[in-house]
Image (cartoon, rainbow, N blue to C red; front, side):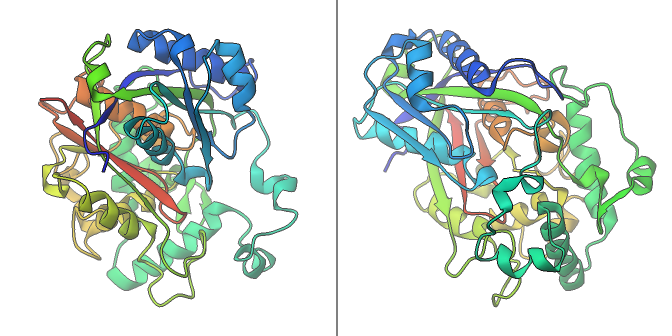
Length: 383
């Protein structure tokens, strides 16, 4: 078990934009160095590295460029939006077991100015599940999630009003965050309802932003964390989840298509934790699409099956609500960098540095994507 044995002690992010000039490698190196500066750790001490498989930032080149020492742990986590907490968890396990002492995890992506993956050659040879769906018009992730959302609406009576609750709540968070793409762009319920369709029932504001940017965090032992510049965010628990007989994004033909990877991940996460859903003061839930928030609320145990939509009512996701969610603006309104901004915001909540600070935040949950093999971490304040 890695419970409270490691901590995130440094975080950093580049500006977020539709078009940043530096390469993904340059952005990655800049942000890793900034995170190390935040922690007060020299780059020569770095001996562990973790990133996403969907990266153009080769670990060898990054290590040389930042001036790292001998690297004794390195790895990547796949499945795009499912990887963020997984990268953190893998480094935490490496530090806890002595494979390395100072690990960095990062995500660098120029998606705002680059080609969309589903519009490029990467889907020329479809995966096994895609071979049964893309020929029939499910050409984008938004189409796949739209189908799942229709099923949820049919089963539990959810409406677009509930999706609107998610989108407008997260937008309000971004409106308080000067770093967010949507910082000065408010959104009313009327604007949401009048937005153009992307893939019914998902409108423009149910879909994440397309963003250039990079983020990184630094992980050390809990003992070493006591000597770092910033208050540590202890990594209390870590889990990953890939359900039996699951199909990525298109889980339509199994017995229960609405029981996604979050349930498997949550079982592992809470099994090794002293903290349960009732002890978590705020959550950073992966939000490439607004209905994923509703599914994650159920999967991670904040409400029962079919109650996620109602959970969003009456400001349930707002500051002061039942579970303040995506307090920096998330992928819908801060930036979309495959969810790594959720990790950094979780750390800020533990430090007491968020632009939408939850009072006396002792623990926060950070999740990766629902619909893909996923991951999650619980971060807590050191006592």
